[in-house]
Amino acid sequence: MLTSRERRRTRHEWRDASDKIGRGRRCGCRARLLERGADPNAQSYTSWTALHGAAEAGCVDCICALLDAGARPDTRAKSGLTPAEIAHKYERDAAAAALAAA
Image 1 (spheres, one colour):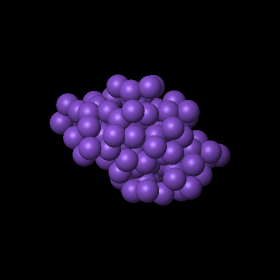
Image 2 (image 1 turned 90 degrees about the vertical axis):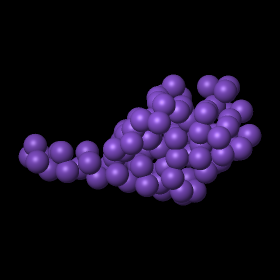
Image 3 (image 1 turned 30 degrees about the horizontal axis):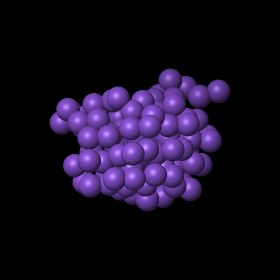
């Protein structure tokens, strides 16, 4: 059984890992983290989620995996932008379409 300190550390590690892979194009890594219980709605210090990062990268497969895992497409970052607005900002049309369908 994990101590409360170990649980906090594990929760922060998942959040940090989720944020990092949300900004890249590592669909396999994201899928493995989600399979192991990572929170698809974990937020960075700027309130970005992995869905924001996937939208910025334009990774439709990642967006679909995150949405299937329960990621909220209406979450706003500190900038006030949703993942769909991020996709539009960076001209990721396929990503914006996938988020609009959510």
